[in-house]
Image 1: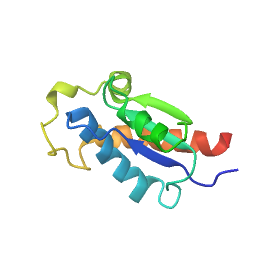
Image 2 (image 1 turned 120 degrees about the vertical axis):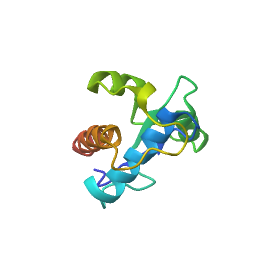
Image 3 (image 1 turned 30 degrees about the vertical axis):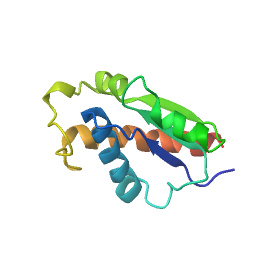
Image 4 (image 1 turned 90 degrees about the vertical axis):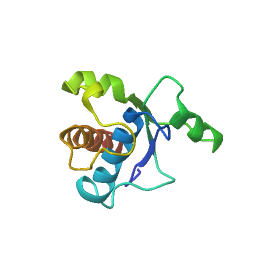
Length: 115
């Protein structure tokens, strides 16, 4: 049984990818500190259909335990992606980051419970 989850974000430059990475920082440092690390079940979060997070996991000979997509989560929570700042200008305190981080933290809990 795993006691941690590895968070693998998309590394792209789109605002969805930045939103994802900022949310991961919040989860890793605040919401699930000590529960996220490498070499554990992987939660891959994709910002677009290029699936770069999943491909990074595959390159390491692993398989993501779960893959979710930022655009789908944004739609689920009513996050207007078009209104987000471009580039790396999305603060960890931004409501969209906090909303996504809370959902990712729930997914971490689900993976931990399932492993």
